Picture 1: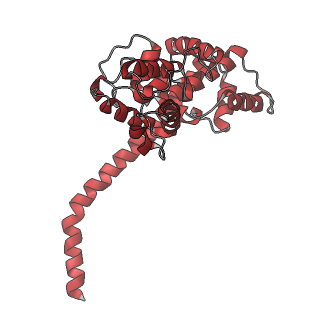
Picture 2: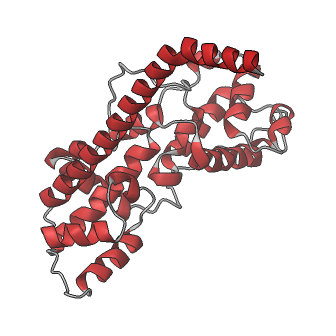
Picture 3: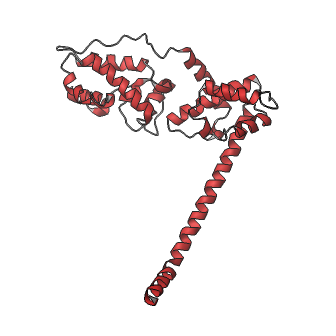
Length: 273
């Protein structure tokens, strides 16, 4: 028994320096995390103040669990209207300027768009330039009917059909149809799975198609929509042979790549958005 105890003691002594390093490292990480959370909370409150929220309204938002930009992810205009109603009819009631309420919706829009694009949602980034540009974008998108398009769908791809006109017709059509977060469905079949960090984009439309990540539930839904389009256009023709294997998963991107590969086009020259 004493031999076992001695062995354990010597093992502890031998490991003690390494254990001390681990404890120091854990302590530093913990402090960094706490400090970073505190800094983010301060930056979030500063962003709310910039858009016109009085301190009493900021305190009430925090009391209702809205303490950082992470809490804005997924919030819709209906959600913000409900939160603002709680604040404005509280005891005591708090007056929030109309323009501040409108800007909160833009703030949420910015957070949700950045979150979908895997861009940072650091509140310090929501400056006047972001407020102006995303305010215009939100207004523009709210006026669009994302359920319809004036672009004609490509003719069904049947025996004897030409591939290039069909391909260009598919690209034109899904460029005009919006998916989740009002992002053009063409991002699903974009030629690069990973965006080029040095790319310069010609427009917001071009940027969204190029950088929207092929992940998350939104992509799964959009990918399925693209597959359904492709299926409806190829079901009664020779191209369905290369689409059929994706019928169960509704994988539009892979189905499109298989079509492109079969019809003698390199995957790296898939499309020009």
